[in-house]
Figure 1 (cartoon, rainbow, N blue to C red):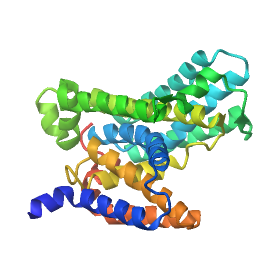
Figure 2 (cartoon, helix red, strand yellow):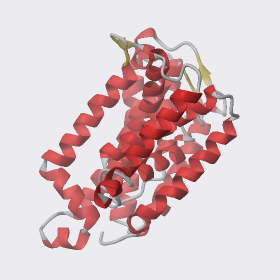
Figure 3 (tube, helix red, strand yellow):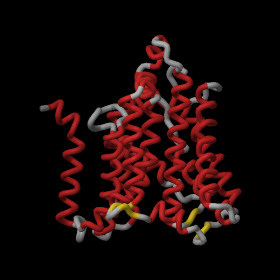
Length: 315
């Protein structure tokens, strides 16, 4: 019984939270509102999946919000310069991948702790975003085909939710059904043992950070399409929310370890809580307070893992 509560206590608490909101928040359970929660959660979940993959490799990526923003800005700048939107989207995605490569090289080749390396890359990405935009937002003038990536639907299901499901399935397959996924898990949990087993841990850590940046870049592009706008701060707030989602996810399913199912649950809890508080008329800063409390409540389960990811282990 105690083991089940340890694994699924957060799931039970999430159901209790949603039940309380369903009883107290007007229209919380309306189908359109539930679809809206799923759509809002999808942006954060796409980014948080990448953060989880980096953490599985034993590295902490604190640049994800700024990398998502950079991908958005690069794409928008090229669209406004008259370039075809597919080319602009690819360029934005490649900019995100480059950030992931820089993170990975800094951590694996130059032995810089990921906490420091990714913070620095995030600051650089923010600087480049402001350089490109001049601090001005890009609004409107996005082609309909691009906007459909964020605003379209598949039946009643918003396309961002579809992208999330496809990405989650691919990430699950990678982690659970491939040798690379097994190497990710081994590298994150016992890097020295993984090295002795013949795993190239530097390559795996690099891969984890590149995958994190790729998910962040994809998040930035989908968010830009959904909003039909971009700015040099469009996704910066996703960093803390993504960390909160992953931390919350590490309290359940596989307690103390980053896991994809837990991350998905964490993003749904954060999106549902924010939606419910808004419906109840609470000001925005109450959501920030609640987010901080979630992080404080969940960090104890994963403090050791996060410390090792931030400051090193075998490279």
